Length: 153
Image 1 (tube, rainbow, N blue to C red):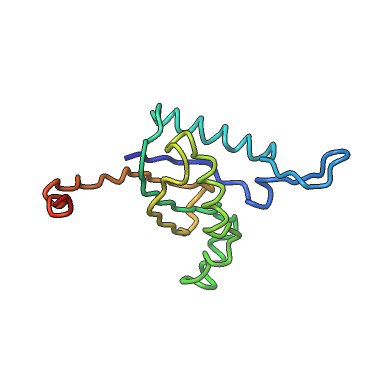
Image 2: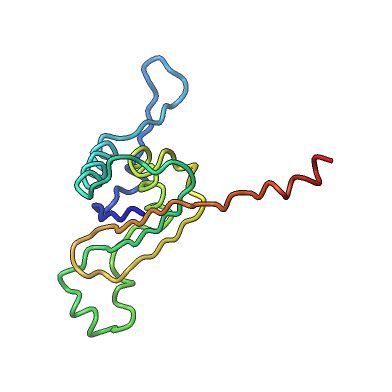
C-alpha cells in the first residue's frame, strides 16, 4: 500500500492546452507547463515518501481532497455550523481525479488503465490545501485448475 500527501492539483481546465501549429489545420492538445510542474511536484512527494517503483497491475485508488481553510472559516462556521465547508472553493472530484491519475502514472502505478476501483471524498478544510492518496494493489485469488478439468473433456 502507498500513502501519499500531495499538493493541491491543478484544475483540469489548465492541465492541458490546445493550439493549432503554424500551417496546421487541426488543434494539438498537450500537457501544459503548469501540469508538468505539478507532475514534478507529485514525483518529488512520492520520492520523499519512499516510493521508488510503481505498483504493477491492478490497483485501488482512494483520494481525499482537503481544500485550503479560508481565513474567515470561524465566521462561516458560526453562521452555518453544518454547512460552512460547502462554501469553500474546491475542485470537483471528477476534475481532481483526472489530474491526479495522470500525474501518478508511472510513479505510483504503471498506467491509469490499471485503476480498477476508486473512491473519492471532499473533506472539511483543516489547514493548507492538499490531497491524501492511498493506492493499494488488488491481489486476485488464483484460479483453481480443477475448474477447467470439465472444460477440457
